[in-house]
Length: 395
Image (cartoon, rainbow, N blue to C red; front, top):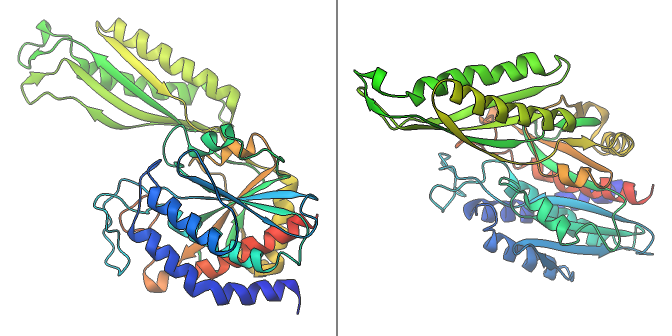
């Protein structure tokens, strides 16, 4: 029997166990950098396989599967473990038991899937040469990003992997399919916090105030000109303010307005320039209108670039495993991922796992309270990643 057929069989064999693991993780979601139970579950499962997991960055887990001639080559596979501050609205047996916390981005799938892949590869360690490094990462959803912390603690050292591969759910793609894109794929992400400070007072006497609400309104519109007039039309950029707090009333002008937003792009040089322009405009415009501002920019993740040659090989291997008709092309996205930190250091590829099932009503997008997946995607996920790992070790 071919190795590909064996992996397919083992994916089917381990699927019920992996689905159960996914449901356990989904029922017990933990926020970024608080993944203590999840980390313990991962560690326990890896030890059952005879592996020796190592804890990094408090809740991160790393382990290695050694094939024949283990020193020949090392590759890394990565999953993230943290959940989001969202109240789940799904009525399913595995619904979140932690109020206000939910696996709404599929990290439960990523973690369970990598554990399933580990089971397959551990069974096959006499059938491949080299080493597979398993990385279970905390804090993908929150700055500074768990990837950056693991890198500082040496997750890409001793030895440095030849490449790293990441898998992420994709509710726009049907279960059983996967998507790939070479080159620039995901945007950088920075958080912008601005406090516009004025002088509050009675709404009927605006001449006695410095109205921070009016200033903030002008500022939000003016900042969009940085995107429309400073950036090249060929350069994707997004500046969004999603929270504006003005604690006044119908007849009360507040002393300050607080704004929070995000800036995203796919070019590090423009990223630096744009952030300086945002800060400059915020300060100068508020002062020109009689107020002042405090601005804090929380630097987030860099843009994510999928190595061209690595992604080409992975796509070809995916077509062998899934069939050409089940491998899709992905467009760029302005979403961000801290997997990007790995892509700045070693060849990296981040692909998508289809999870959609319209017949069953599984269509909600990530980061929503009704997000869920067709769990048949886990059969695809564990087998595909195992196959990609074996193929990459043989390059």
